[in-house]
Length: 147
View 1 (cartoon, rainbow, N blue to C red):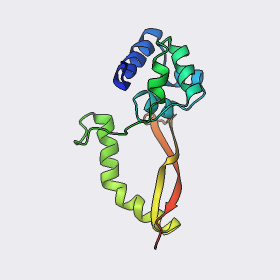
View 2 (view 1 turned 120 degrees about the vertical axis):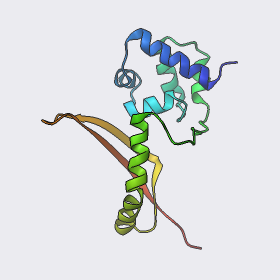
View 3 (view 1 turned 90 degrees about the vertical axis):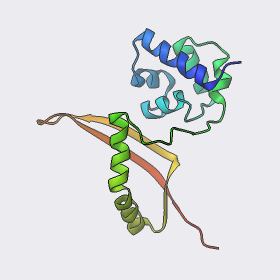
């Protein structure tokens, strides 16, 4: 029986063998690069047609379609990340998380930004002192209910 971890390893292997980028894979399946990578790592579930498109694009076994359709558990390592790139995001949220929360509450009221009704993009911005990374997130605001 094939697992999500098995399929993720097959995806990474096929990507490397084909010399593809996440952007290239995303184009082949009609999704964004951010969502595509997240789903391929098991953090989002695929619709059947998108799973089939990925399996076809990467020449994966047909059994992978049903595995890709399984609901994600969204479980990740809870320790402080040690990868420098991932750690910077951890640090950014540690430093600016309370600020973001305060500003969101001032503009919208008490609630959260959805990570379900959500999208994100990563853009390279040329800059004279070194290229810059632009990470843009948009999520539906969900206010807390009172009862």
